[in-house]
Image (cartoon, rainbow, N blue to C red; front, side, top):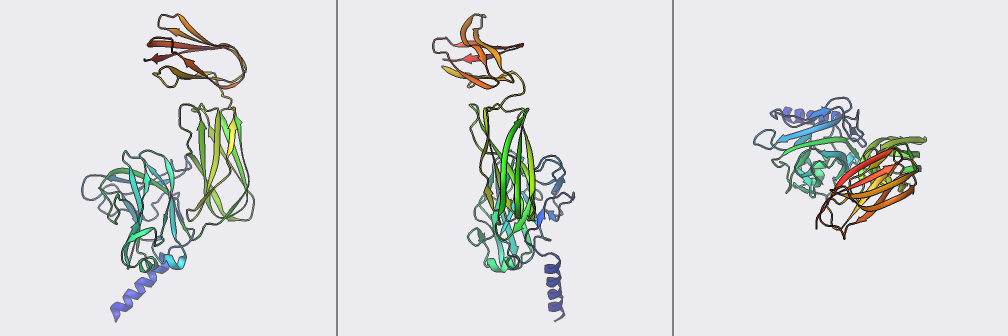
Length: 385
């Protein structure tokens, strides 16, 4: 009888002190791991990095590593037995979301695992993180359709004792041996996606940057906004890429103004698209309308490397003009003889490109020279037939 009373009191205290709650959020800004560990014997336990999270400088995150050998520390696992334990069913929490960054050189298959009296259940389908692919958002559903494993999911979710984040190719609660470094941030939980009223979203160029501004008139359970960008040029595939994150205001009926500055120093696109990916605390998300910046005006003169290079028989040459200028663009062979006069006229400020056809030329090294006002630059290209 005394043992039963003791067990009951322990269970009561456990669920009272460490109870999962909707909208709880681990962002590691206090410099602690907030209860996320990997076992006392792990030689490289999780640690908090104070810079480099999804929002950049000043955004802390949890770094989890594994050594890929054998024994303690060989598997990429971190777990929590404190604030992420408790009764998920009563709390109404059915999704756990987070940001992840694979800093390693191997592909990661990340899953969530909940453990409790009904057994261990893990994600049936992993979230795949390619090597060094930057911060990505991930959401793990706790529904019966999304989890597999133990014998009684409701029993486990009503008395969860541990939540794991782990790499596992085939699934399971133990994880796989791998050499890896994983950043984790903004671990959050909620019950249902709720709306954010976006009043406006604009983009404008200012010097060598684009300033994004957006306004919300009300927010409910707003975790934040991922800022995504798509560059339109000839050298890179036009795909959406995450460039930043802004924390939301949670729940508010007041108007909020947000801004984000995108540095264009290392871009050569003539057209740039932006969109917002708004997340609720349960990981559900919606996209904003797309805004564009076109006819991007560069800050400095510049002659870019031709693409493709080597080439046969044609290649694209691009150059930047920060102001209207008379432009000369010529091609020379290795002996210094002019073989093509591509441009000899005034051009407006912006990013320009021209297609160079070399069907009549023989294989070899060629040089192309740009002259615009007081600016002059020459680059080398290789024609292989």
